[in-house]
Length: 118
Length: 113
Image 1 (cartoon, rainbow over the protein chains, first blue to last red):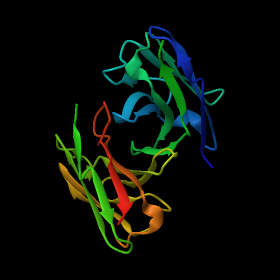
Image 2 (tube, helix red, strand yellow; image 1 turned 45 degrees about the vertical axis):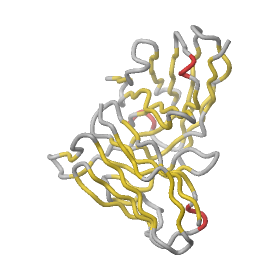
Image 3 (cartoon, chains in turn purple, brown; image 1 turned 90 degrees about the horizontal axis):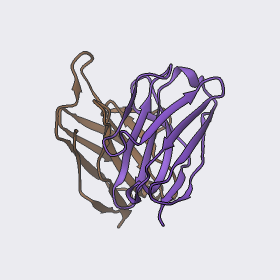
Image 4 (cartoon, rainbow over the protein chains, first blue to last red; image 1 turned 120 degrees about the vertical axis):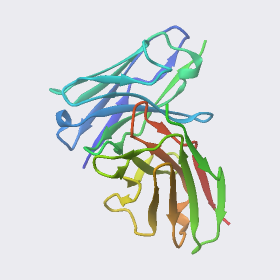
C-alpha cells in the first residue's frame, strides 16, 4: 500500500524559511515523479512543484518560482520542499503527491499545515 | 497557464439521482500522439486529501465504483455520478496535466437534496 507522510509544517514569520519532508513507502519511490500541491480555503488546490524520477528536471508554479526548491533522496525514499522568503499567501495545507506514468496524481499524503504570520 | 473552469460551484441532488459536473479548459488538452485527453477528476471528502476518480478524461481509477463516469474531449469535460449515494458528498475537482503548471478547477461542492 502506498503511503506518503508529510512533516515539517508549522508557524513561520513572513520572510522566513521552512523545509517540508515527505516519507514515502509501499512503492519503488525512485522510479516515479513526485509533486507538492497546496490547498487554501480561498484558492482551492494549487500545484506547487514537480520533480521527475532521477531528480531532474524540476518545475515550479509561478507564485513560488525562485523561492521554493524541490528535491528528493531516493536512497531514503524522501521528498523535500525548501521554502524561503515565505509570504502570507503561502499559508496552506501542503500535500505530497505521487504521479503515475500517465501523469495524474494517484496517491496523496494527509498534508501538513504551513502558516505564515507575524 | 491553462485555466480550468468548473460549473456549477455547488450542486444538490437527491439520493439515487444523477449528478453532472462540468469542466472547461482554456486550451485544448488532447494529446495528439495517443489521442488521450490529459484530464483527471478528483473527489475530496471533508478532512481528507483528494482521491483520483478518473484520468484520461474517461478512464476510471482502479477500485472506483462504476457509477462515476467521465466524458468529453478537447476543452469540454463532464463528470457524471449516476445513482447518487450518501457517501458521494464531497468536493469534486478537475485537473489538467497537459502542461505545467498543472492546474485545477475551483471545485464543485456536491450535497444531498
